[in-house]
Amino acid sequence: MNEKKKKHLGTNLMIISIIFSLCICIGMGCIGIAIYYKSTINHYKKYISGILTMAAGDLDGDDLEQCINTLTESEKYKNRQKLLNQIRDSYDIEYIYMVKPLKMEEPDNMMYVISGIGKEEMNDKDNAYLGKLSGSEYSEKVAEYYISAMSSEGITYYANKTTFGYMYSGLEAVRNSKGEAIAVLAVDVSIKEMVDVLTRYIQSIAAAGIIIAVIFFIALYRWIRRRIVVPIQKLDDAANDFVKKSHESLLPSELEFTDPEIHSGDEIQTLSDSLMTLSNDLKSYMNTLLRETKEKERIESELSIATEIQASMLPCIFPPFPNVSEFDIYASMSPAKEVGGDFYDFFMIDENHLAVVMADVSGKGVPAALFMVIGKTLIKDYSNFGGSLGEVFTKVNDLLCESNKEELFITAFEGVIDLRTGEMEFVNAGHEKPIVYHKDKDSWEVYQTRAGFVLAGLEGIQYQSGTMNLKKGDRLLLYTDGIPEAVNPLKEQYGMERLVQILQENKTTELDQMLKNIRADVDKFADGAEQFDDITMLCMEFKEFK
Image (cartoon, rainbow, N blue to C red; front, side, top):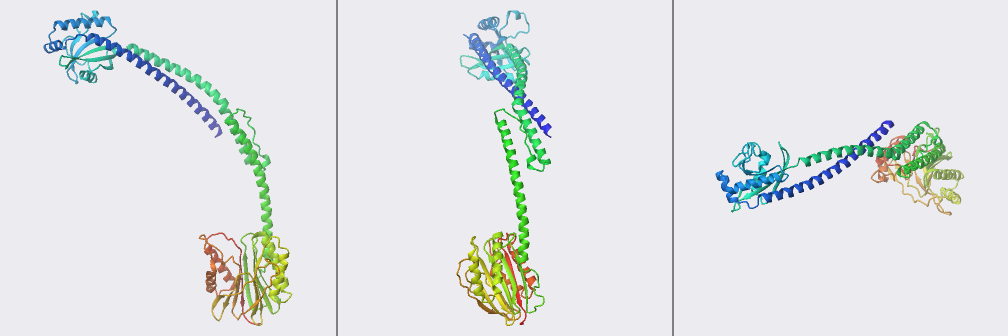
């Protein structure tokens, strides 16, 4: 492939050089021919014009018209004949004559009136005489010039190739006293010499053109080859070698762009230097990319481990309490990134009280996940110490504020259910309102709780707890804002109304399947839009009193 390209470049240069040289020679030759032809023709015109003026001097048109009509030679006619004979012998012309155009169609489209006869032609029986018809001597095209001259005021010139050679003729109308054209006075001058000169000139130009083209081509080709072709071949070889190394080498350090050593001082040297710089930059970029790829793989590996660790920190075995029949519970968490900031938790404070927690850390990724671990641990630990949930959140808030350099915060909801009575104490720190299913009403209700300030937002906040009652068959759904605030490609939000509707459709569905159906409905609504927030849900069904 590369060899063909090199040969093709050289061939193109050869063809272009030859064509360019020939075009120059042909152009110069055409200019020379045009100048010579125009100059010579102008000379002929002046020469013919002088002879016509001399031949037509003191011409009696009325007498000549009488001779033409009667085909009788008058004394004036004979004197004019002698004048034409003298002009024919004295000047360098081929013919001088008068004719009367008859018709354009052949034959006999002309009638001779007077013809100048040279001394050597005196005894020639074929000489033109008064009244002689031209036969097929004049073509229809030539006859047009004579007819045109009859109606023209000046001299009509035309060139023609005859059986006697190349002629250049001048035609002028002869008129009577009324100004009517009665004949045409014509002078024929041989331009064979001019044609011969032009022929020799064209031949000389052609020969010179070929010689110049060859010399020009050789010089141009040697120059182009030295300044363009050879440097480009060096660049091509260096580039092919670099590409070959790039396919065979595994490490960027093994890539080396061989310097073609071009010192032409023009754009090709600039291109060579640019390729050297580009190859070095490419090696540097590949080294950087290799390091970043390894670092990315390391981070991804660590994030994968972090995801597994985070998942293991959340209750993930269902049912979690096989020997407990008073309630059923199920939860799920889908982070928007490798690790998330949402978390849920549920645990038995004692044999009669179940705690459920749902929280959302501001931000995403590793910082939120680490803050989530701290918050989850503190909430669980202080919930087990006893006291109201308001006191638990007050203490947790103060501890989180002490080490919150990143200024993160947590929205959280915790409820503690007394399995003997169904009463649930709860506290809400800026979190989403819980949704409760009342079996006796056969409907879901967004429970209107008063939300307190977020955790880790401001030290010294005093949180207050509230209570609600759950009956047999009631369900409690806790969730994060990743569900109602999920958006589709039209930037529309999923919303609470749609969430309540899908809950109502799944009011009797098993808890695990219900949460899966909610997530499927969210995905359907999103219609491929990117998930920007963690999606976490927890649902508890109160089955019976203890």
